Image (tube, rainbow, N blue to C red; front, side):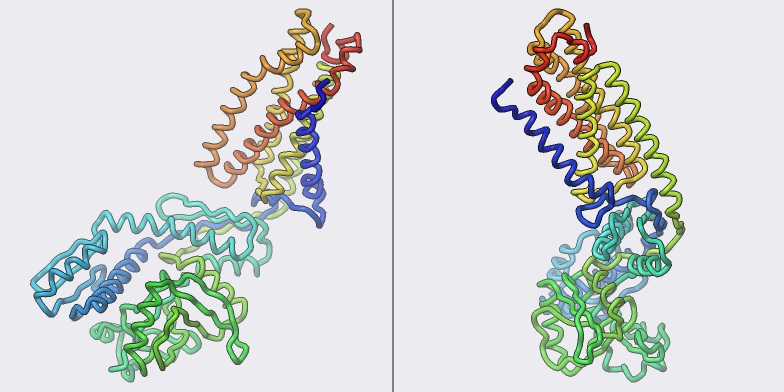
Length: 521
């Protein structure tokens, strides 16, 4: 026996690790980390959402108009009639000598189809950029919804794209109507923040103008969020939008009402500071999702790139809006196309059936190994039990989600874990039959079996990685379980059992009956 059996030490540490993390998870005790159950096991909410990609194109046109306004003011270029005509941005340059400078500015904006008629410009998105914008809007919506749900505190939500414009959202653990309503509102809230200038010249005519008449002045009419009878006439092209927001937090005003403090990035801070400096005494509308939340007077230049939104929020509403602002505005509105509630009874039946399969398979393998390989089978079973504990422990430690395919992966891992021990035991038995000494047979048995074990496990691991990279939620769960199981089985089968044999080598050599150790005469 070796003076220091490092294999046995590593195996003992893996057993301790498995017990410490797996037991609390299996018993669902208050202490220790737990394995999150997927939608198919604990029930929850399944939704299919559709993204209005055309809105993303419209939003980009508005952003382009805002950029041109900013660049023109920053470069002291005189332009007139800047407005949005359907999906086009139109404006005129007042001085022909400034056309070259304007052309240089427009080169900074990618994806434009520019038409010039003298001093008049018409800007459209290219067909390629329109398709790219639509595709990107769905990808951004997926990321935004996922970020919102993560900040909301929902465990392991599944948000994946389906087709060209649809998104599948699965929320495990959502059981009550109140939870469902809160989640749906958070997901669907556009959270499109805009700071817009109020048209002070004709603001008093807002109640007598129609939308088409307001458009002739380059304005739009917006309602107050608290009183739909109160209306504001604001410039159609915003000063800033939510893309410049880098943080948003809930706070309280002097009346102890919930408000939202937001912070702008460096570009937004500069634009905001310059605008407020040039418009002291005028009003600024804080617009969220097309409604005016406040319209304060600008008393002085506002530096630092920060501001606040107040509008009679409840604490819960303010929290949800702040989450939505931090995670980013949706590039386009999303519509609920399909909703299904998965009851926990289905999950209970699935857990019961999977548990029966796992226990039955484990018992059959356990008995077979003892009957066929005798004490070597007992050693293999110790490794098998440790392997299952390690899988549960790793999943609990990293907060992985266990799905029905994941449970199938554990059942499959039982067979794969014992397969390595079968290969090793068979190699040892073959060498013992050839008359080789026990120490030599054990060492050569592991050496000869190593290549076959590595080939099988590494190949399966590569397939699992591909499944995880390209699969959806349930398939990812299966891939994660299989990957952990493969790595754990290589640890327990190759290092663990080898360490046990090294520790028991003296006793095996003294025992004349090799059959009861390896099932061979």
